[in-house]
Length: 544
Image (cartoon, rainbow, N blue to C red):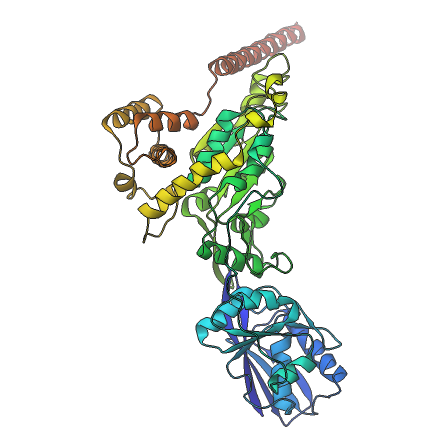
């Protein structure tokens, strides 16, 4: 007897339909599983066999073949336990034939027949709806995710006994719950920009970064507020649209990071991995490619603290995702493309000890400082739209009180104003924020006044800007104009954007480094001359 039920496999951040086929025929008794399955899926045959036996049933003494089709897609995880059990029970006659012909099943089975939660239920139910299925059967722990999808009915089961009851119509099927779209995003966890004393320039840079999704680099001594600033950027970002919320929630559902009892994420992600992170953890990868931190930060913030302490090779791998806003992982089994549209916020000290240019406290030599800063390449710096110095906080700012500080609510008003302007301007286009503009879009959407154009031309020649720097400066100025409510980019907007594009070359530092290099070269030459003279004297003595 042959029967088939529908399930779904995870491929990167996509869900692909899988047909679980079971055939019971005469021959040597046994159970065989095929269809490009991993060891986790292959172990399902023992879990299913034991769960059915604990249900009070036993497999027939016949040859049972289980196929997961299509066979060219790798199947991982324990999500196929429940559909395999359903197909086997249907083949045994324990449940009515073809009762699950238009139903998608996902779930893990324990040995006692109870179900366990699995990742990827939310996108799996969306896939079932798009395919025209009428019902989804999932573990009861995943029912909240399933009910968030409109246009399809779902049911949560606790055991195989419940599965048989559903097949007989003994358990009611629940419709999706309306009104589960994200609401207004507020300040989370009590964090607020008013907690940061002083640092008005830094707060302004954070506002511009949040309004246009621009990358931000913070440089300053220890304890100046770099990490505090980065962690408060999500509190001023624009609220998630329904499409963005669903997109992020699907990613977090696939990797199993959705908070318990939550179907959709209502706040933008904030990811802060340690500086010892590996390339696979940051970008994604593995035998079966999984999303990395840049994908988990999609539509949110990726904060990299102690930027120069990271592996330079890992940092350089960020260059392509920052430009393309997606990452493609190629393996022998196929290629996966993960979304990666995020704000990169980096924090670094100006030198190894952290106190340069305060020579009263800095203990680093010019060569040490040059070596430390050179760990971040110019190509990566070019992709940082905003580079902001974070000075040490003064005593007067610390004792002034929070009532005089700019709060997240005030900063967010300007961000929302800019977000609305961008939404109206880019309606119907494949991008949302100013930072996503391509070179061909800039002449159309970044129109300058005469004074602003002349200032930009002078800055281009004065600072020897690259084409990328030129485009990033215009996009930053476009965001500043949106915050101010201006339709054209004025001279003041270009001027402020240029201030944030400075590479902070310290003349005194450069001179000191150059002098130190020349002194080292002179000393090395003197040592070589001394060794030559000493060798010549020894040679003369040996001859005599």
